[in-house]
Length: 383
Image (cartoon, rainbow, N blue to C red; front, side, top):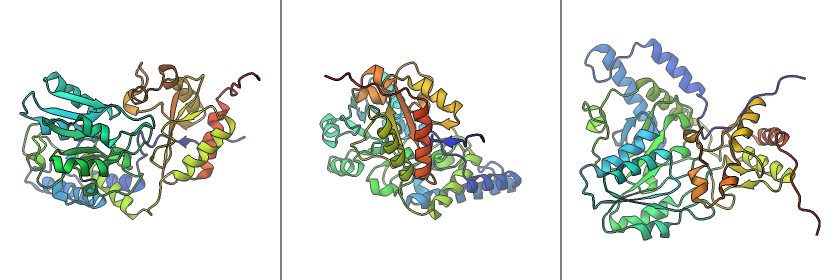
């Protein structure tokens, strides 16, 4: 019998480097690009390549290139959006965010709290979404920013961003949106959110890790989180990570050419049907909420999520227990705990996230290998 085909089911952790990005990086390595801030010819070549990448990324988001600040990834973009808004703010200032944000947003909030700035973390509903009414109820006259992700990286649950932005607009309170997980999963326009700032990360789209962007709406100014030179129109100091950004641009251009559709939906749906048919006791988190089309976070009673991930790796299936940023953490997911899921069940989590080319056959094969690693369901004794 031949070797099993490797199944990569961790697209929410990172998309594999796409062909377009790989080819552009190989080309860039041969171009002898210099520091884009330098005035010599290698610097000019670097500057042209950087601005071409900016134009490609901006086109994907329906933005003007001048509205994009290039960063080292989504984490830095989130810190810039939050810290930049509170630079020089009095300790009476207030941040509203959610309890299910990415670790980078929560870390930025913790830094503000250490300065004495009030931070409110709004709990999600049972379905994994955060209610607009709950966020608005947390707002005070001193609220300087509301930060809410567009899609949760663990559960895939989609947040009501447009409704939230519309409710905040009459209050003149800016909104920051972490849209990292939407890349490669859905078509999006940065301005359509109605937000002041939106963060992205290139490696979720098929670019190399190390390149990201923050979209800043016209009329909004942020203090730089990283000081240094006057790069990025004075909004981010330091030499930009040129090669990852060039790869991000190539991945963005390829994504614009790709056909529209719910990326990974056929695989995800077939996967969940097959798992449920064999193990109806397995819980799909946020199953009743609007979700990313590719994401399935399972709670498998009686199993340890970390051990299950390791066992699946032995079967050439790449999955995660939740956020890649929390891999190896002793505590269960903060997202699941915020949803009120018991600790023992939260430790039984395993996340499958499929790619845009994955079809129903991939989903069924992923389910087959998962079920092969699970014990039989425990049925209650007859009454």
